[in-house]
Length: 278
Image 1 (cartoon, rainbow, N blue to C red):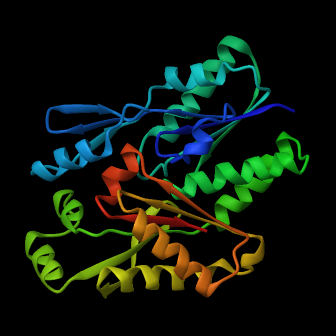
Image 2: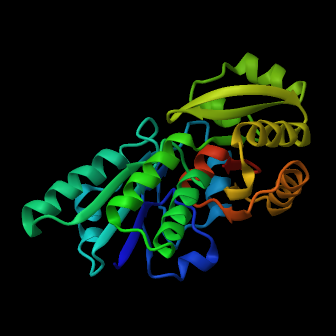
């Protein structure tokens, strides 16, 4: 069976996977004040970070239209897997589902599974890589669908942000709370509960936050020998390497993949942020 993996642009592909024709992303649109930024191959991370830093408002995103998803389904591959941001963070999942209905109205049935990742960035990539693994094992569309949804339900996502400014801008922190947290160098360790962002812990210092994130990840991972860990970084490859070393010290994952955030995850994680999925 031939297959294609379609993601919204929060599927943070590695440079190698960007060259793989099995993988395709459809872009969200980002807005900072009056500036509109398309989250595609033209995205300039450093320029976007400068825009966000200069703005007093919270950046926003708009999901791809159903028509864009529909067009992505009009591919030669027989099986299509669509991986979207958590439906609690974006309308991408709903848009992809409407796109599926539009495709079927025009072309008839096709093997299309739209997956609400209940995650983002590293979590979406982890699911995409798992789909590739399952096809290499010779599974068919129904078997892959069953296995990937099971994995989605057991996957854990974590992130550490370097600055509390994004939380302050979007109303999750008052200015006073942000001031005291910054003055004390407090870094939150965040996670996801069925796609809803939650705070797991907070510690003083960024390196301690990364260590705590890895501690929680390893504790919840169970048998690591069969699992892959994915680390996505926003403009901080050295920190991603540090997190990888921390995971190696604590566990025996079969693979640890590092990738860089594109536009959507850059907007959420901020400069220096790390997203990890296991």
